[in-house]
Length: 260
Image (cartoon, rainbow, N blue to C red; front, top):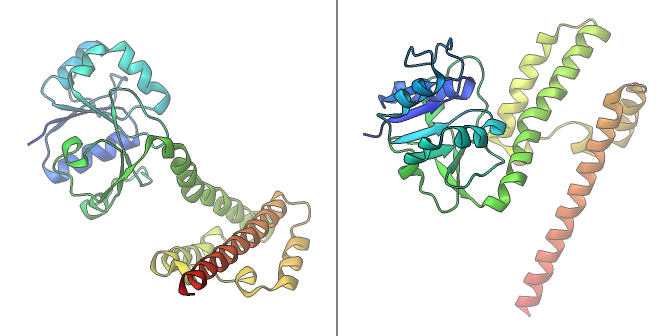
């Protein structure tokens, strides 16, 4: 069985440590902060503690901040004696294999079934089962040239929606005197609808083509930064619809041409 060393003191390191524990995979942990509860070894010297952590491991997970990965590799060159894996969704590093878990990691730890469902996007040229043996997760290859675009889409899908929901919740409480919690059932159902039936999950005035309601919505948001965001979403939806229609026509034309 593979033995892992986890480098990092943040959420991702905590979640990986818990996942390995649940799977019964041996691992040790190192955090730069000697007071971190994640540290396996109680050694004050940072480098000595790191060497003690990685010594029994054959694979080292670099779960420090993206901006710190290159610094850690330069500062501790002995790490290159191990199979190195990083989990950055946007960056790549020479001599280090990338495997990005497509998941958001909260403060609370997750049950085993949620960890095993996390898809990993593995840099082309690397084998998931070689990098992370013992993990039963789904995995997909991704080219290095595609990582920046992939990560941008992840940020939009997972982070921008949080900003929007928080903004709406603040306005519920501050402008309408409605409890923010009253949104929760709606947001849960919206998410469930998308997961189950993405192609038909969209509802509301955009889906209905209800221009009058859209105009009233925009008027009600006068002076609010959300008004421009609403306009941008309408413009994006219309542009995406036009592109889809054009692709459908092109495809139909191609089929008609080939049928002649």
